[in-house]
Length: 254
Image (cartoon, rainbow, N blue to C red; front, side, top):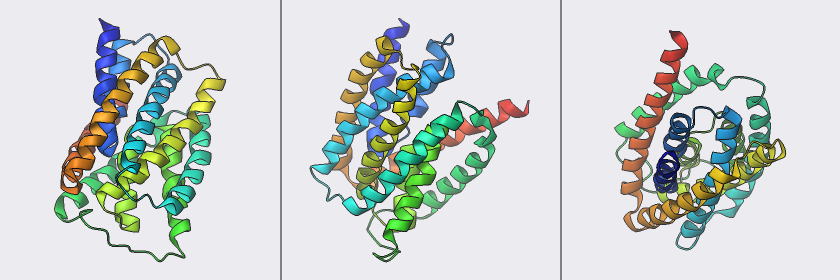
């Protein structure tokens, strides 16, 4: 029964993650509940294999209909790859709980900002010059690449927010960019988990199939529904991230 529930949550995670990120908020807690005997690196590593495959499918779907700004992808992706591997290395040595109170505050600010600004991410309005684009793209990719390797859940959503709020892309373009950058970061940190034999293939491969299916349908829906739909899903996912980290911080304080 646990196995089939895990596959269901993998499909649901792929569906949500392909739209605006945050699939790890579904998959990882489900993994912990269904298989409490597994170690944290086993769960993160196995989930990373499935999510990398699912996000790849979503990225492919977006690239068919959205003009991908490859310059942004290149700088953000390279920075994310380096920092994600470093984040995974640090995660194996330090508890991720040390960052969670800070992350909680930042995500609450993000949620309030997005909710109050009804037109946020609906249209492209670039805030930086072409000359400064590599610096800001690399900065967003680096910070959230490290977060991806160190903590994980919500990386896609935070990438979307970064590309919309800092650079000025709309939600659809930002989602497309974030999927490609997220794949690069996932693969980078996955190398660490594979080298240290933290991936449980008997669970990761069925999850991969279900995650890919969910990602295909979710990304297709996002492309068809557009920016307004993505903004609404983004707010729901960010609310979920807030609740997740609030619970973690509350547990740490008791």
